[in-house]
Structures are given as structure tokens and as C-alpha cells.
Length: 258
Image (tube, rainbow, N blue to C red; front, side):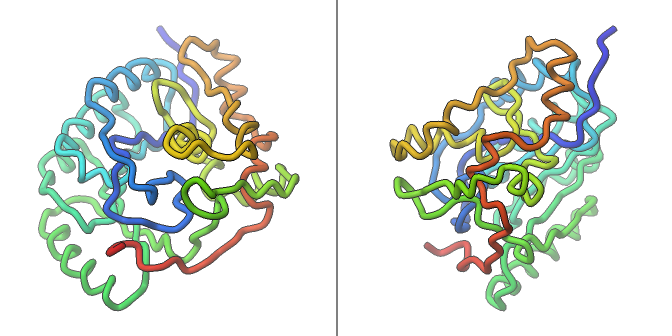
């Protein structure tokens, strides 16, 4: 019988594509990546960890998860693998596919991340709210725009880390890493920026300022229980310096139409 380690939350991408282009997206989804995480890869990643972890919460997201045509299958497998966890399908709700039967059957919450308070944006979202509410699923609306933070400077090949050299403060103000461990490529990552930074480097060949952060080594599934527990309990570390030591809140531009 395996002993599973308690963990607050795991996020799992099922696509890197997004219909939004939000400034300073912590998942770099504003950089127009293409491609899905295949269902076979998703299943393989989950299988590597399902007997090791006892997550309070699992987020299925991207990118925009409704851009993955098999989104319902990922939801079903997540529930099969983690029967006691709260599971959220995180979406901006501007693209919808009626998978209400799957969500209800598997007790999965549709978590709508509200990205702006512009009247035009709210008008479009209101139409989709009516559709969602007709499904009869569990739904939550997160006003993400109220605390949107910068996690890097610039865009594309010109992005730069903050490097305030106060990793403890960066950790204490972290918008993603405090409780959003990433399961990516079969390994556990401290946070989204570290998990998806290699994708950015592959696409843009980033400046040498990022080298120290690209050296981050995620946790492999062959780890010991002690190594896993240490990973979960680890707070601030040098890699946290890539993000600002003080929150850089801002109202981003309209996230679509670019």
C-alpha cells in the first residue's frame, strides 16, 4: 500500500494554446504557443504520480482548455485517478463546449477566470454565463483582474526577470507558486513560470539573464517520500528571484482581439 503525500494543489495543462493574450501571463500563454498535451501524455503523467500524491485540489487548464477537443476525457481521467480531490476546469469562458454531463458526473467545478471589467468584455461574458448556468454544473467566477500581477518584464525574446535579489519577499508575494505546483512533462515543478520557461527559451532563445532559472531541476516521480515531502514544504529559494519582490499590480489591456 502506497503512502501518499498531502499537497495543496496541482495544475495540469491540457493545451498550451489560448484565445487570450494577457500581458505577463504566468503560463506564457500570451506568446501564442500551439499544440495540446496529448491525452496519452496526460494519462502517463498522472499515472506516474497518482499513487504518490493526495491533492486537495487539481486544476485542469492551459492555455484555454476548451481549445482541446478531448477536454472531457481529461476531466474523466483526472477524477478516476484522484477520486477524493476537488477538481476544477479553469476557463476564460469565451470558448465553450457543452461537456456538462461529464462535469456533473465527475463532480468537477467549472472555474471561470474573469480577466477584465471592461463593459464590452462583461457583455460577452454575460452571454456565456447564461449558457453555463443552463448546464446545471457547479460554477465559480474568479475576478482575476483585481489582482493581476507582473511576473516578468517585457514580451517575447525581450522578456527579463526582475531579480530584485530578495527571494524570500518574492516568495511571500508569489501569485502562483504558493499553492499551484505544476505537473508538466511527467515531473513536478515549483510554479508555472519555471515549468514553462523552457518552452519560452526554445521559441525565443532568451537572454543569458534567464540561464540560472533554466537550470531549475523539477522533481522526478522516482523520488523518495522524503524528497517529495521536502519539495512540497520548500518555501523560498533562489529561483524565486525571477519574480518581483513586491507585487506589481496592473490593469492589463483587453485580453483578446490582438
